[in-house]
Length: 369
Ligand SMILES: Cc1cc2nc3c(=O)[nH]c(=O)nc-3n(C[C@H](O)[C@H](O)[C@H](O)COP(=O)(O)OP(=O)(O)OC[C@H]3O[C@@H](n4cnc5c(N)ncnc54)[C@H](O)[C@@H]3O)c2cc1C
Image (cartoon, rainbow, N blue to C red; front, side):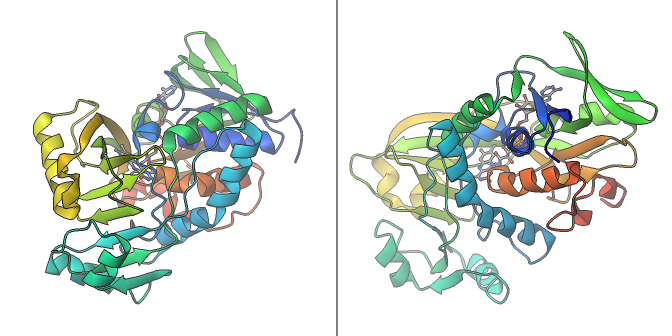
């Protein structure tokens, strides 16, 4: 299908909405991307940018396969965005070291070895040979060489610039108040500027999504999970790649800063940072990388991950809302999962068979969770 006569409305301009708009616009579909504020001002630019397909997965299965698909797509996808937008998303191929500081953590990490791919167990001295600044108290760890990283703010800027160049219509400060059903199908949206209609309506409203689906009888258990973060800088470099341990990670960026993240708090829709929480997070980072002790504080922030009860995203259609396509609930991994989500939703919209089975991510699974 390659016809500008096909149209789509995309609700929510975070990484997921922007990526879907990208894929559909590239396929010749006329997209209108709506956001209640400016694009990418919520979870997607609060993220650290780890592409942690291995480090974030604790068991084999559909979620791991989804992460791996996205990981395979990432480099080419980000290069295409770079080329079209002329803005670098700062894709870095340095992997992640997942250090164990306690025996139970060591055991959990080693239990992944029979099924996880591209991972190797390193002893304490092997870890220290790679990252000399790590604490000597670590018990070893896993090296995930394929878990690369990107800069979420740069990626957002590049996607936005690229979307404008490709001709996607972007309407910021345009909250969607409701979905419009005609003859049993969702065909449009209500905004303060009036109603809009399209062949396809796709909802990517992150942690806010269920407010729009509930009136249709589609109760998606989506909720905000706050993550507070810190950015710091040291006079001399203390880290080459990302290091991660239970409850804390440190991600070095190209400008010399390091992102320390992140808390996980079910605290409603508030994005306030608290000194006690931030200092506790920093103390955990210093336990992993003692030389951070004298670091300069650059900034602190918080973002709201779109959480789901079973930790899996909602992707696909629902019998409660024919005509509506759903892509929400990417929780801790929306930056990683963006290219796979964009491609799979595009395949659904074009009526193609999807590259991987979307049944485990069905919005209709909510009865079971
Ligand atoms: C601290 C932190 C660290 C993270 N680190 C990583 C990481 O390292 N790697 C990784 O892969 N993921 C990470 N994540 C997770 C990742 O950021 C999210 O999974 C991802 O950003 C979700 O994208 P989204 O587009 O679904 O949501 P959002 O970015 O929240 O976008 C949703 C958009 O919908 C808009 N919207 C909502 N309601 C309406 C409405 N009614 N009308 C119009 N617009 C609406 C909002 O304004 C918003 O712009 C992190 C998240 C946080 C908070």
